[in-house]
Image 1 (cartoon, rainbow, N blue to C red):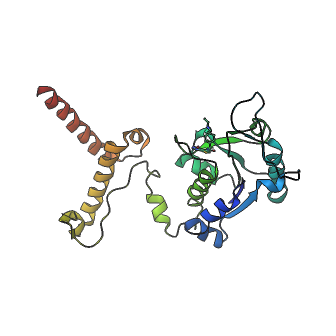
Image 2 (cartoon, protein in one colour):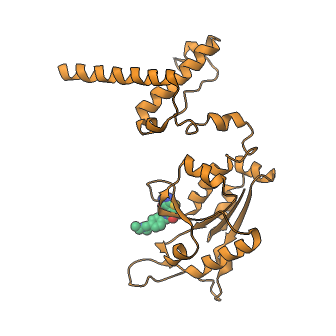
Image 3 (tube, helix red, strand yellow):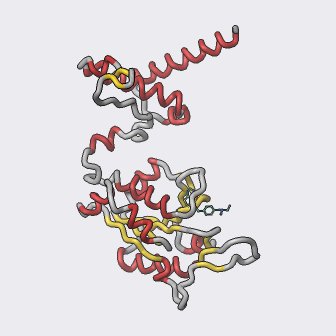
Length: 254
Ligand code: 9D3
């Protein structure tokens, strides 16, 4: 799996890759990240990457030519990319499903914008998709690019030491995680649930699944419609919903 990031802040990308799971994936040769300074693909003495907007208005717009030359240089080095992604607030939402899809594409180019916007001809000429990382404003595409590299690299076999933890990940099954505890058994008056100390492994599994379903229903009910639930989890959810209905009824009475 390779990523090539085009940015005016290459050190921001380097800094984000200096440590952690992705770093180890790079060191093991499972992931390769090329970082490309957009200014190296300018052709004027001042290494200009932006200009005033046609039609007027505030701010600056990133020029098409440096991005075009950067993508052509990457294509010459790596071959045809599986995707040329523009990180953009206008993009489709990046999700775990999108991460799995990108994982299958082999060579992914990530273009980071700054300033008010990017010349639309970047999209017209060589961008194959636009992705956003969420409904909030960040200052540029660099942190979103790092986030995507991290989420996709975790899916490359061998990058995460314990394959079981990738499989168990929240979102792989579509449910939030259950609560975790480690020693001591009591802290600030709060005890670890007895079932976890009991040694009844079947009961522990049941409790964790119950917690995962209950938490997802309480905090992220939007996830439940596409979650993969087994029969017992379905019944748990139905029981939780039945309880809510009863609560609504008694609220209506007082
Ligand atoms: C101040 C400019 N804004 C005017 C309405 C638009 C705007 C342009 C560029 C806002 C933010 C940015 C920089 N953000 C990204 O490039 C970006 C982003 C984001 O802000 N949120 C979520 N995902 C992404 S991916 C790239």
